[in-house]
Length: 424
Image (cartoon, rainbow, N blue to C red; front, side, top):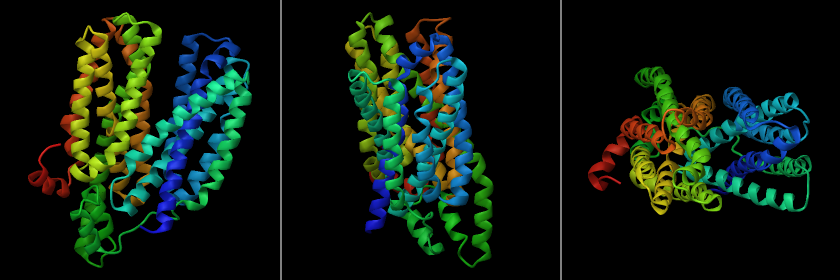
């Protein structure tokens, strides 16, 4: 593997970690900002919706910009903007200015999220093997880093604005320094024969990959196949987006309700209940670090199918178990199962049409982000009608649907794997 490609991969890790650190820095400062501005939890919930709305709009804008200008331009630019915007939520003294600050920060974060994922697709394509899940793992590592820095800032009596300004300034430097290592353009397969070879080896993630490469071949048949593939891509992208919504809704529900489940349903002390989310997050990070090797061995379809099925089993244990330690095991399985699902959906969207990788990733990521935001709210609404643990039946159903629909990722290379390797 050549040095520039390795450098591009390292730079992608850096940007994913940067994005996770910036978002995590905002999250750890929420209690202090809420107290200073003087708003209720309900008002804060409404403001967080505005942050999500800004992120959704940013994702759509960045997707098209990345396709037209290239990730090497858009990724560092959005990294700088997102880092600079981090300080904004730390400055307001009233809800209205906080709302505006969150919209701007959410927009910049959404731009960085989609552009770095689009670049990750290009890196994965150039490598010829799965590397997407590891990138998403470093996003989680960035969140852990933010929590550690936030704790240190709080112990040093730094105000939220000061701590966020310092992290934002460091982020600007990191974004600029890492820019030169990014790939200048999406890698392309030279001709139809190499496209077929990549597809047969499992390096292409979908039939659309091969067809897009075949467009360069000087045959009318290849051109017709390419046009037919493009017509089928849009519907496939929206199916991937729907699956991302379901998976990320489950993830969002775990983020906000796992600790409350142990405290309110099983009567665990608050200090113990906090470990429910910690268990979920830890197994999700570990799973993402391992997922790329499993994808290379069994294929992305198997990871999505068996991962979603594992998550369904895990949340089913949480739903019915009256024992605290069984609940911990259930949350651990839930995180482990979900860990590899989102990276496979993002990767499939980006590889469906390399020329429109940014736009396709933005659709999948955007709808997935809606699910992430909706998850806690949907579970909260359902608690008006039934016990908290019973609301998790919805999560079981969503995971089961995802497992059944995982065939959307099936490729010819998956079919050749099945007789040789069987199931995961």
